Image 1 (cartoon, rainbow, N blue to C red):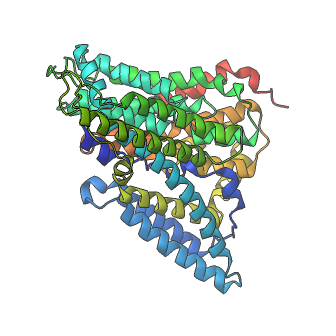
Image 2: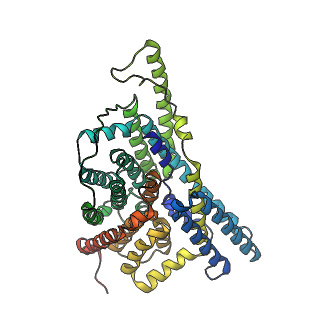
Image 3: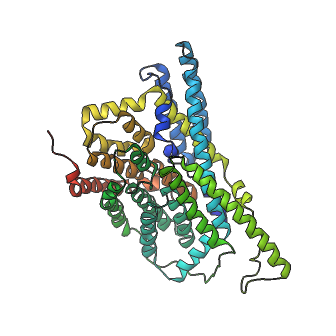
Amino acid sequence: MIDVVRRSLPLLAGGVAACIPGAALAAVPQVNLTTHWAGYAALALFALAYVMVVLEEFTHLRKSQPVMLAAGVIWALLAAVTARQGMPELAHAAVGGYLLQYAELLLFLLAAMTYVNAMSERNVFEALRCWLLRRNLGYRSLFWITGGIAFLLSPFLDNLTTALVLCAVLLAVGAGNARFITLGCISIVVAANAGGAFSPFGDITTLMVWQRGVVGFWQFFALFLPALVNWLVPALLMHFAVPRGVPQNSGDHVRMKRGAGGIVALFAVTILLAVAFHSFLGLPPFLGMITGLALLKLYGWQLDRSNRQLAIVGFEPEGTPGEIDSFDSYEQVARAEWDTLLFFFGVIMCVGALGFCGYLALASQHFYGGLGPTTANILVGLLSSVLDNIPMMVAVLQMNPDMSTGQWLLVTLTAGVGGSLLSIGSAAGVALMGQARGQYTFFGHLKWTWAIALGYAASVATHLWVNASLFPPPG
């Protein structure tokens, strides 16, 4: 179980741009290369790299390799072109801006990964697995329980961490049943993305919209019912495909190691610190996460000292031989996989290059100028399943179209849940592809895209109906 979580934690990669602040992106210099050969080359190289990411399960090529190569080649081309146009410093300044954003993302994820690694090492997930197995719940009950918890937790934590933790539980209770794991992972991805869409801090897109001031704090919760519909529709359709039966109860009884409860509590405090630093102090969320990581290290130091003292006096909890062992938080930091962290780097640089060329702003102009806000906002969600929701939301915020509160909530909803259409469209989806490697795949998710699309359409219709008062009549 610990090995599964260790291998999967770094694959928080799918929504790579999801930690890029909109204000920071707006400050990055841009040029108009949308009709230049270098711009076309950037688009082609990024598309080719992303195809290689999708085909990872066939090529066995690690995700970081194609996007890192594409990022280097693309920025070399853009630097050469802008230098010939008499602006040699422009590409350098842009790369520096995106590098700063990557550093913030790296520190944020490093803190989150360390906490989840620490909880895994303290047998938190193993204990939860055994507890669920002892309840003798069937596969269908577990399908709904894991999805429901994902929907309810993601508004308060974040959709990445929520999906990761629940998938670890799903893999444990459903070991050996690939069909159940595939359907359960799809449900968790959809539920986590939907749950994050109706909270100001459930997803980075909602944080960006909230920070811009176009939607008030309490107005986000008008999306609760549409978000619930977004998950329930595909979950109901998948329910009948979930296998019957009950997972085998091995009779195992795993107790959490000493300090597990303290680490879980500190993780909750760390999430609150990240939210507080961002919401009340105007500081980047990673500072709150790093502060929480420092608390974990101090707690680990105290726990290790007390463990040694207990070992000296020969204390051993009843029925748990060997539980008094050392805890080194730096070991949990070291277990992060740099392959995935470099994948973040490559995609941030590639997406940043497209923004540098002017493609994101151009797409937004065509959407809102020619299609109208409702159609454009629905398309933003559909495109976010491929291009990720944050670059799309950044483009919308940069354009700042004149829209009602209902329309801003619509684009917040669609950008948040649109990534569920494909497994590569959200951070949660890519994270679970790595965590349940070989059991939850791109094509396994694609088989149920039709059901997720029905949920997407139903959630949009629900929003247009229940929140009709937020849409002023035309004219």
